[in-house]
Amino acid sequence: MSRKCEICGKGQVSGNQVSHSNRHSRRKWNANIQTVRIVDNGTVRKANVCTRCMRSGKIQRAI
Image (cartoon, rainbow, N blue to C red; front, side, top):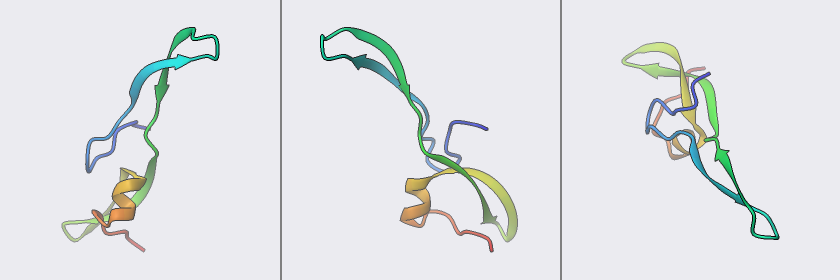
């Protein structure tokens, strides 16, 4: 599954995990991407969409 939202383009972000002793190691934060059925130009299709787009109403869910 793709780790990028098809609506807003939100994807994976990288940075440092910092321990209590201030040691740094690389880590990744994945966007909360869900595969949902949406209505796109009158047709129903599956899309990889982040939960922020679903919650804000940027897509129309298919039933």
